[in-house]
Length: 322
Ligand code: ADP
Ligand code: MG
Image (cartoon, rainbow, N blue to C red; front, top):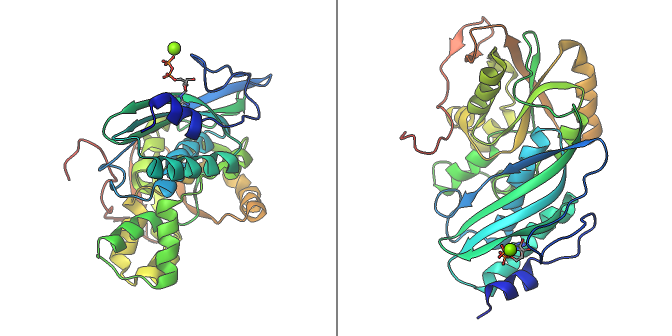
């Protein structure tokens, strides 16, 4: 059985493309480019909490890095480096090898050097850290939403939650719909290009990891504004067509987590420009609502007459009992 250093050497040491000093020393040395700020984020995946213990290791390797890169995308930062802290119950190479392949597939797809980490024995947990660059003053935060802004979301939030519902036997999906939903759940595509393209356009941005309502709620809270989503603008057709159960489709769209789409706000006079970004990148962008001046931190979904509709759950929170 391989020891820790052999595992690191064999599976987690790869040629780097833009790093001064990488895996093998006490720390890595990074050389950020002139005029850049560093955006740093970490997101941990724990067996039994974020994934099932028998999850496919290659898919898990991809997802572990992808969900972290999604946070950089949401800040309009360009991914550059990552570290990987991992606890493994055993040094099982038939698991570690595909896991590392999945992780590096994602790293290669987004130009990320793996420059360090920590490898220990313990209950399976994966904690990547990612570092990106953003020109000074160009990062997009949760706190910049302004009254009057449009609210937008990319892609089809809810696909990952619909996959979970199907896996739990709560709905039947056609073969194509099932494949699409499972891909969203197992191999999320962080919206890095979109995040970069929204520099100077979006006022506030977040990635949808805990559900649209919950995550837009964070923008409302941090920006001190209220957000009104228009029910008839929500991109629900694909979900409804997939499951045939409108209630489930709506719950997945509003409260489902794990999608890693971007939600953002921007000025009304930028509508055409934003639509152009979506067309250029081939990413569906839906304008779903409006930022209002108050009450602060409030989030409502309204019908075409402006009447509030019931929300569909709160989104996932650790330590909170349903
Ligand atoms: P130290 O004892 O100085 O903390 P370690 O023995 O933990 O160093 O790690 C040795 C080297 O391997 C370091 O450069 C560390 O960053 C790197 N490393 C450890 N685990 C991983 C991993 N899973 N992926 C990438 N690099 C790793
Ligand atoms: Mg050391």
